[in-house]
Length: 567
Image (cartoon, rainbow, N blue to C red):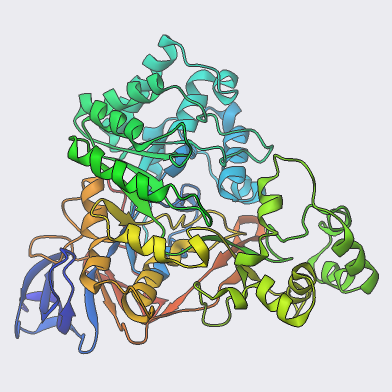
């Protein structure tokens, strides 16, 4: 018999703690790291990691695989980017608890907030649950290529207890709060990771209505926070418009103090000043110095979206003529769009003036709109923007964007950097990345399937911030820490996130020199033939979950050791 089931030899170990990398071997037995050292004994399986970095598997705190976990075993696209633990239920949207008569409401909420089409969810969800405990049992009965943990989604909880009053954002009564607290307590006992919610203006149902938790009173938040304190476990996740003058991180710190548990929120910056992010970093430091545990999640590149005639949005989707063509099959639509008369009509038409159509105006921000290319470049100079290229050619940016998106058999795609791109650069992101209470995340894996593919953020962080950026590069050990032990610690996962004997053997073997993002592609492989954007990567030589190799060189091995984590 051999001492180990698997040995990883000669790799550069980046252990997740932030300490300097070192060379060594890792011996794995029964899904755990059994030993780390030099010249470990032979194993049943050996992997030569010479020339590779060896990291803990990435712990992604912000995904939306709430539907996907009920019909799919591979959590695509996160599985292409070294993620070995995914947390679902973010932003307060999900599918449990849910009475049968409320299913349609939750589907339309997820469709609007997270851009997962109604037909995909209506056909894909089995709805073999009512309570959140039942939903966890469904996940626990299945096998995946990574581990999964789940928040209780506040919007679903609110609608379950309050019905139409909850959906209409009426104030919760004392009885409502008591019932929500009771159900949250039951869910925590069953293994829920915590409670997730949203009070941002941008989260809306597909019918345009604000998310049921938008404007939820502080009293409601504090009532939920007290359940975490009483149970002595759980994490509070929130999306809050902290950048607005009447909001602050201090209010989030109050929730964290009431819960006596960690709180994590989404952070970013606008593309133009005056900038709120320096003040928010000061508030974040003050909150943690005052005894609260508040951690910001940051997307390491611009918060953006992909635009195209095959995708959910494009710069012309609110014009009168395009609306008339939007339901046509893609090939027929592109043929019509290439007609010079149709092109002239659309370019002459204004966008829909409805002020509620925020995205309808944002998709015309040509100064921060780019062609990504086959090897995507997410930080391009202004002269390579659609506006910059159009000016150099003496045409309007609308005309250039239109022509680029009508190229080829399925039309071209453009990338819009909506936020985190202050003054046309990622310098502000780099400054935020240096803060001790900031971790990497917000990839939204499983969501926004027709507009973004940010689940690749981990690969981007390693290529752009560690290896490629001309100025302001970050230490490899620190970037790895912010995606492994730092995120695992927030969630209370004390069995992973570090390469240490006795901890989980969730491991990535990465060729950092060869690591590269591929161009986003569309697949029509969701239930009902639904589409989704997928972005793959080169350079992940192996990803290991619970001691089993789940992928080699980006291709699945067939192993499914991932399970539900009951917190």
